[in-house]
Length: 204
Image (cartoon, rainbow, N blue to C red; front, side, top):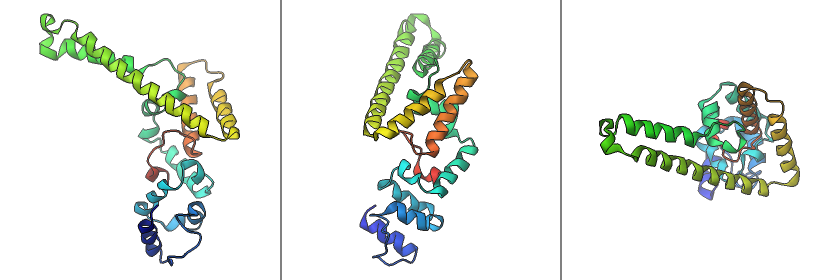
């Protein structure tokens, strides 16, 4: 939060410029006092000087996240969650293979009216490109996940590992795996532990 944003926020709330706790220097303390009266267009500014995990200490924010989760939002649906947080998903489906198959099918049926003499191996080639793009995307996500874990204090890493172990135990069916995965994602969302987070406006 820069000085102009801070002045605009304090002015909106009718607070002096030297107000303490400062929204830029002590954002969590400021939010604890004034969260309920800060409008959405100003609340998002706190994403620049606080993390989802830091904001978790505020009960009102945890409650809002819990209420949001209870609505089963599209961002936290099974399909969206598997795409956004693939390293948490233990299932066998692989999105790149699915998209590659769709690409091949499109070429066979739609491209040049499916004429084999024109299509040749194009469908397989395009499908391979799609799968390679997905592999590259997952490699990048896993790299960021590793960097995220390394940045956490030891106790937080242990906590997250325990959560993941608990989520992956005793899963005998695809339904149970999906349920455990969604529960893990939603719990991490509530406690600010997702390495790729949904927009701040959704959690406030």
